[in-house]
Image (tube, rainbow over all chains, first blue to last red; front, side, top):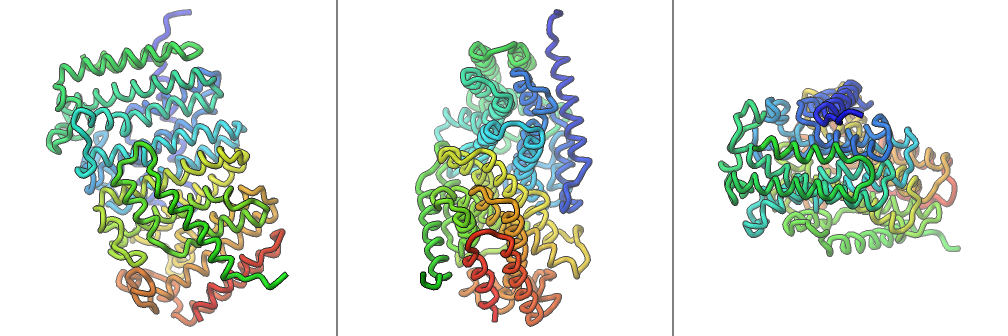
Length: 300
Length: 300
């Protein structure tokens, strides 16, 4: 066997996910108003790394599940991610006009449609896998287990809570804890859920699930640190969104708290811990280790 | 056996649901920011008829399920309903300041928290029953079946789609179809889901589920017609929200299209059809028939 090629594996899985998203957006569920579907599809097809659905498909594959069978759950992860971005960008929140190089959803469709597109994507993220995974005869207890992880990642103690910490001054926590809490709740929970939903759906053993949970936590934190660094070091073209927003909004990020160099060191440490957590996971975890390493390589 | 007393049965089930809501709001899920929980609890405990959770508990009881076992699903219905009201009231949507006799969520907590409280309630509506119903050892296939109905009721072809039809001028449909479509998608889907989730959770037979689906559709339409009538005939005190909003916003309601008298006749017809649909349902459907009848009695 030749040396596995991480970049090629990522690109291949990403292309598979992209086709899934295109298929999803090509058919409008009966009873869905056209402009609502258009608005949902606008943000779903706006690009991005597709990190979360790629992780879901790869985690399921680690335990022998064909990627066609994990795709509905992978798409659900991207729906939740997209919904949270649409709502984060709203004028009442981060008030951003540019996302993935395009006007944000509310700039294009108006605030009412943007709020409802986010809501509809959140609901679809449960409706779609519940319908499709049952059709694929995936055992119900696995579907329930995976969706519990997904719902928990979105809910009051997940992304929604993280966004409150990040935007609501009255919900402030001490400065040195703040970026870690935001990283965990805004970013880490969904990256962790991406890995776990794939593994649970494919029937992974408990020790592997625990190892992947720790992997997801550390990968998520590394990813958020990277995001904070890119906000100060990137151009709008490279970033696809408005850089410098964190500083303009006085956000307490890893960079504002530790500076760029120290933030890079922290990201490397989180990446190392992510790789270490993989020791508890059965099977060939090359893809996951290479992903964690590629993330911090990019930053240096 | 004495004549069953519908009003007493409704009041008793409603009190049971109210205690469930109070218990739910008394404990904050770990990691949930205090102000987010406060905002969610503010709207959840604001009152209302609790029609949806009462329907869920009663539908499950029809097929022999103890109300403690259907409560998590009943609470999920109220979470979805509350979330949709919070978002409907936002300035970008119906821009309402009064709901259930209290300032609306965004007036009290600001728009950002109100958006996130709605999002968090939508996610919690899946997280909570997934966690609690598994703990109660309800079979996973029933949980999946019930949650699919719930997600479908909220999603792009459900409430979110209905709200787009109701607020987005560019999504207009022909006037004589409009109120029926809005009634089905904004109100009917969740009332239907309330009945169906209870029945599915309790293991109801297919014919009964079909009958209850038709019942829920007609009850939901009758309920929406009533709501349109109350908007023109009620005081703010009796209504608990701002009356006359439909006319002020030029909404195409059953009343604007047919007038109050004809709308009342339509509500009676929908109520009659709802009762008729119960013939297909096994067991003692007295509560459901009496509910449909009480709804139109009130209007006359």
